[in-house]
Length: 164
Image (cartoon, rainbow, N blue to C red):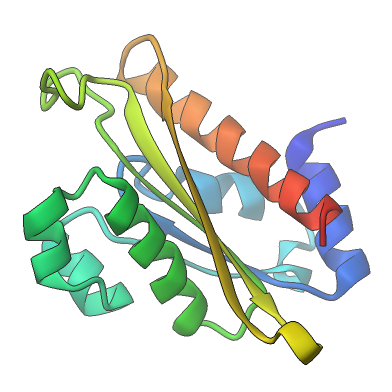
């Protein structure tokens, strides 16, 4: 089954909504989600925060954090996911920041490096926000890196709904 269709089904069953915070994908995760009819049942909004200023202004990512770690970092991905969740009435967020290429890579962060942040709002006795992060390196050109990023994000979101 298409992971986005399965994700939509899981979010509907749990009465959850999703928000995205995207840099290197430029809104492709949100576009993939909203390609499905009825996505307004489970998709709340998407932030395309391509510039560092947008990450700070729209999501509340501290400029000092970006300066210290770089935009493509675990710290920034986590802050983006947390900020998206705090700026939307939802239970789940995904954030992506990476180097899609063909330029912009370095020895430490080669083209294809993508950091993911996932945040989940917890209710009840364990109320609060739980944030997870991970890094992946994808091969291929810009389109391939972005497509792999979208696919990975959707699969991990699906995994998170299963473990809720």
